[in-house]
Length: 301
Ligand SMILES: [Ca+2]
Ligand SMILES: [Ca+2]
Ligand SMILES: [Ca+2]
Image 1 (cartoon, rainbow, N blue to C red):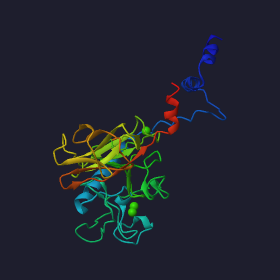
Image 2: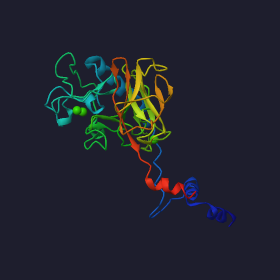
Image 3: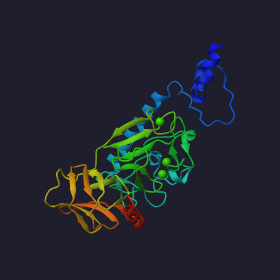
Image 4: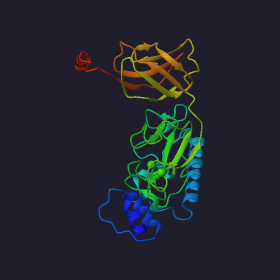
């Protein structure tokens, strides 16, 4: 009787845990709590770590052969168009979207990997049919799924490599990695402490912007810009721009990060950096207007 009383005092989640620990079967209808993932089967973690390394090694050989990085989906592609699936021909679509290691970003146009000096010599790996996602599972069509049904994700030093849209995005780990990384989200299928990560390669050698701390800001706000090769301290021939306007209110400037204040005359535009003759990519920053009502309200404070 004492024990029953103790269980009744627990909240619903703790009660489920208590029942699981006691080995009682749980029969539930509609629950507000998602079911916890089953524990990984024996060997799955070890096999995943081995696959991460295999994919990373294949990517490195692609880089040595072609000078570029490609999507995980590409790694098993053939030069031939005699493939079961269209996406397994490296030249499907008339070329291949590739990552330029100098910038860690996609080249603006598809590369031709059917001729030297960028000749494709794959397949660099083989994928079991049952492990390939025909829909892409929200990533690239034909990509390899991990043992828990989630795609292995490729990150460049600039962010998540999405070859389906040929853009680098700030999803999941955004620009957290200073090198390339292949990531399995682990048994729970979401970003968490059980993720398995293998890093490889080098940071970009060119001046590249990867992220702004905010996408929109008011004039006077402090914004943090992340990227590569800004030059420590910002030398005399470096400058930060918003559209065509030079931003002078800079509170810190390091090789990887610049912190600045949005100027009073700022208008929405692309943030960019110039270093000597080198010009970076641009990241959009929207300048917000204080609603006029807000100014009115201040009178009543
Ligand atoms: Ca392909
Ligand atoms: Ca493929
Ligand atoms: Ca996870």
